[in-house]
Length: 381
Image 1 (spheres, helix red, strand yellow):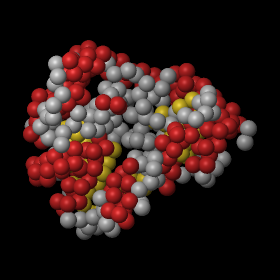
Image 2 (image 1 turned 60 degrees about the vertical axis):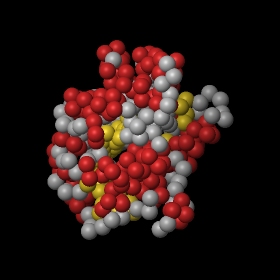
Image 3 (image 1 turned 90 degrees about the vertical axis):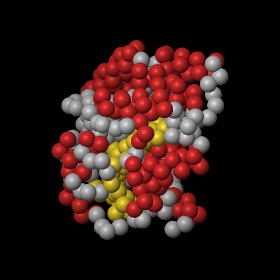
């Protein structure tokens, strides 16, 4: 498949389609997007402003500022118990470019086409794989077991043409967190692993920080500042890349992006080094957990079926198969009649058809009112 052909396979996010419709309407409760409602911590903003005032606005090294890369390596080594060097860090303009680079590098280096991904999984994964002329092979997560992975189902999908397995923990959309035993099982497959760790830190039960890098060196990790530090609009992410992929990754970064945003890089250094920011992030995590508990209680109160008890990120899956077999249509009905924007499960794969996803990255008031409206609408069906 060439790029022109692969473009035909790229689909828009259903959540964004819902959002575009919702912003034209009044009195809408937004539960569809993973957009933190917390402001970026003040020390981070102040550092960005300082960079502008001091005219620190020229291009940086294509791999990112050495100081930032050093702090990222230090952060991972201290939080995750890894042993990485700054030379293996590539700073990117958000985690989406990081993912694009990771997929391309793995496909090009391996001379193979297939990448294993979970069903359900993040909506952009198939788009990126298709765009880069790869082939996505899904393995189903267990609907009846909190959408957990089954290593045997993964093994069944491996062929001589498998380039890598793409994992995400904590998971969007299910909130599942990969445990140590599961990480080890993935590592033992012997495949290259692309690990999307953008929601790391947002974990409410058990080990808060863990990485595939603790189990195998044959992995590319992508992470960023959008979720944990509430810096979505700053557009800054990074890759942790093994030596064998570094040269190709740098060439791509240079040619596609030149370098990541300079101002955001200065701000990100402050995000990783400020004790005030660290305390504020801890408070955010506590509040997300509080909202998670409230969301669970409100769903139960309104007799809405929770499909998975999330341990991380800030999403909840609701089982609506009793009422529909078309989650996209149902999401638009909820928008029109209940005035609540939700994400249809089909956005994340066929295994989530008949489900909807809501986000609790919003105020408690919005969560309570939004769930009440959904519950009242469903009661009337």
